[in-house]
Image (cartoon, rainbow, N blue to C red; front, side):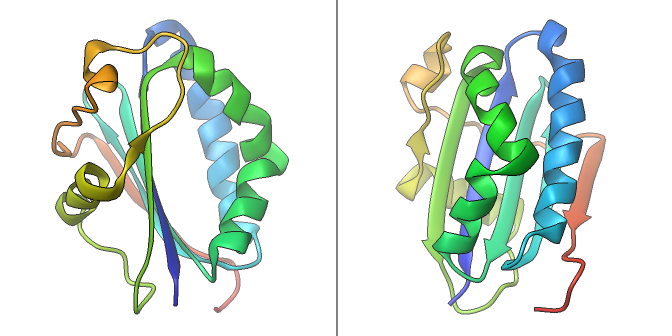
Length: 146
């Protein structure tokens, strides 16, 4: 059964935004080439909040991606760059990803806050507003057939 990973990050300052966007693009390309990646999608909301949703063969494939390459390199910086961060994981019958609204419901019911050094009040209360699609939304596609 496919394993789904959902994240939401809010970049706390425009100062960090260029580096974050650069590394996010590199991480997206890494995901597309990682064995076990089934597909995904990205969304940037107004207010510098970023959502990712990816499907994997299993949690081992996602964890291998998470700790290696560009993604593994950038993760420690997110502690400083973000004032809100949350994650949710689940398995489902198909690799088809749910809508952003359905994903938000999952985040609110099974998600957890991630560690950040400068948490906002919303982060501390695990208050995550429903997604508000912004100017950028896009798919991630594996470079190989699953």
